[in-house]
Image 1 (cartoon, one colour):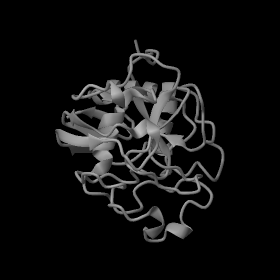
Image 2 (cartoon, helix red, strand yellow; image 1 turned 180 degrees about the vertical axis):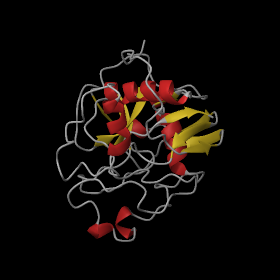
Image 3 (tube, one colour; image 1 turned 120 degrees about the horizontal axis):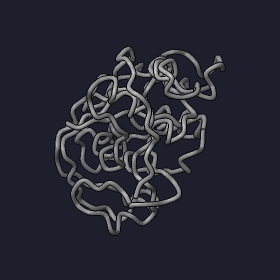
Length: 243
């Protein structure tokens, strides 16, 4: 069975709550023939309606979690290049991200969680089938101001235009933790409806681009993963909840 975050006591609802975007239920083609082996086979998937935060969790929001006694401060909280209140919180482990979701659920009265890989890709595509990126097939270098962005770290969230579903910074800024265990060949055995990944593994799945990669924005279908206890400076997360 998947590993779960340790329980924490309820706290007062004084945190910064996420703006949630409703992602409609529907079928979509998951994966890409233009990508790596772990993105194949391309297969049709149904995802129930759910809600996803419009932005990645920020330093300001995560600080409320820390103040409530939920966890230790994030590793780069004293680094001037990474601690702007509106930058995404970085270098939190999968366990800390899951624990944040538990705390937010207790505080806000909704069931917050990390999105599955299928939910994340469905949302990232914005209803555009078979496109490489949320905006279409044009390369990331064609984005306005691309060459001037992400010089020293992730940008404050929500500074660029949202995509078709209303999400900001999707496929860019930081990798985002997903709830699934990672399995390279999972697509060959994935169920059609609401896949949630294999039952066990050694790495957790993540999605999206990174401020420190040579190409800063990722394709919608691109997959990544690291062990859940790792703290990487280009890893953050956004929260999901039921639709």
